[in-house]
Length: 324
Image 1 (tube, rainbow, N blue to C red):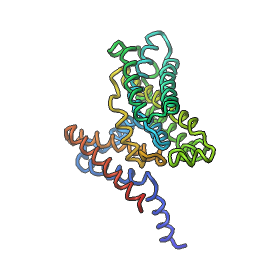
Image 2: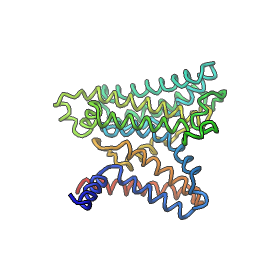
Image 3: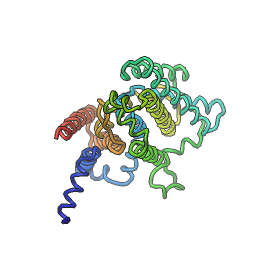
Image 4: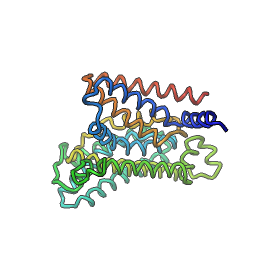
């Protein structure tokens, strides 16, 4: 086989990957803003800042990717992140250590994810409606626990997760970013090389066929929402590290940003398709757009227009690629 034929085959495989489109878009957007604002946008410090800002969205996007591949959706993730920050701050105020407080926050999000899965399975109501209800419920609980105000907490080790100190200069990124990358790697391995991963894809692709093949759809659904809840709690830990307070009004609209990242990354709202790498690239692309607009001096409404246009174009290109 000639080198030209081999290169052509490699190119075809790459172009068929769900992450190919988001990667190209990411490079184009980065090049565009680098040309428009070379003095501030280009540079390692700004790049690491954008990566750090993407960590929370990226972790939640991993869980959302699994849910959307399974054929569902979760609108409660933003409220769960806020609820986690409130639980952590309240636990620290009560005298708990950083690790215990983080476990308490993740535990609450885990229970919420389990409730989402059980309600979707038992009530047989569309996930959109179920998680719309739990979104409001979790937000209300967060405001109730916090007495509708921010909760200050003493400084703990959690505050260092999203900060790159001089002692950690050799780590390139803060610990929180490495946690996000580790979570994404484990999820990608699970999705591509385990039985649960194959069952998630099969359930989202064709539930009737999956049931005939002996797949326990109810169990798969509950597990997926449970995992998504845990990841929302973990994202809440990183969000608390950034805020250093428990804020019941935090992460409003986060669920829409996460869904946008998954869709840009090749995910399908009808289930059966999605990419962990693509979702991370989609989340990073949204951060690049927001940061780039700020550096260029464009107003927030321009950023929203660009984001909406990219989502529509991404869905159109994905539909075109699938038809071919």
